[in-house]
Image 1 (cartoon, each protein chain N blue to C red):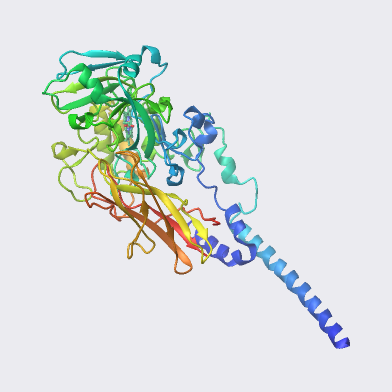
Image 2 (image 1 turned 45 degrees about the horizontal axis):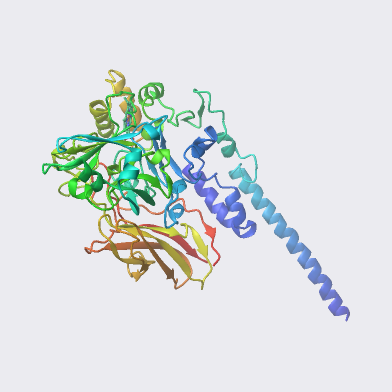
Length: 155
Length: 406
């Protein structure tokens, strides 16, 4: 009888201890993770608030991006904005990738067929900006699937 | 930067057993944040588009669907891609809208009001597949210029209108006719009133097909503004750019139409296959006619996790330009083995067809389901990218989704 009681008590202490250490590990793990990834479990997540930034101000640069157009902030930005957004939005530019020659041929095509003006001395600045910030990456013959959002599917 | 990410990932892996997967998601960077939604809350309302649609460009409007949004048999407006080349016409008065048929190959030009078209000719309704010639462009390597469409620049809506051939018969067409070219009310991005954003067309044999319509209704209602209100030429199975929106004039030409974006490199591919990135002369580029065989898994959405032992029902659509899809198959082992899907015949010519199947998985793990359609002439979709071309047209590579069996 006594033996059983003792064993029960021991079991209870053992359980409490396991629970305690378990929680400690979880807490510590969370803390360490938080140190490495500061946005962890903070609900006013920086990344989310950023997208709500006042976009009316035409000069705001956030995380290296010119908020109003989406262009990368780099030498020549203002010349690119002035010359490349009057007809179409910057989105048509930023979704494309090309080498220096490629960008020059896109510009020539627009000059020959779409009323784009002679860019004069600015052409070099624009082409350099584009070739540096919107250069092609090697994609091969078929890319691996990325950005998969996993979700449970019940039948 | 890379190193920090690496540490983050391994640590996450180590603690995940304690914390559980829920936290993995709450701490990840917000997915798909397109700031544009915050900038302009009316953007999607403007065209009655679903919020999950992807805006590639907002001037001119270029919006595409995601594969799982295209699950309906008949594509509703909210999931229909928009490819605009210019500025949408403003203040349209349908009661004053006219269509002029002119050109070298008409005996005498003739003008019809919308009311004339609706009352003088018999009306027909067809489900017609419209796919942008550049659908899938984003996958080409080296990259091709233009809107970087992924998979969602395709739709199959129900179009109602009169047959172009009935109208042409009423006008009277000379034997010299070779091509039709449409003209429309949209305006050029540069603001130049003398420039047309796009003016394409089709050869006479396509113009004379029963399914080639002058449409005034889409899915039983007036065509939405972004899709060509009040009158659209609809030539299913060909690059959707042949289906002119806001059409107010059709010229019957005695030569291949030479309007904007008929000339190389627009909507043309090399007449002979070329190496990746090769420069191609304009006169070695040929006009795209029928679109190639293709298919899309619309259910489930990529990323489904199911339990071991469960089967997975898949479904989607397949189409083949002027042809029909004869065979539909799926693979869960990257093409090592293929299994046939059920495929329904098209409701009418040029409508997409619906396929379905039930997939079994042999064991736990990461899978990709690849689907492959074969047309009535025996052509199948390639698993790799098809022939590279300077403008990135006609990517009909197999569609695939990721699945995990737990």
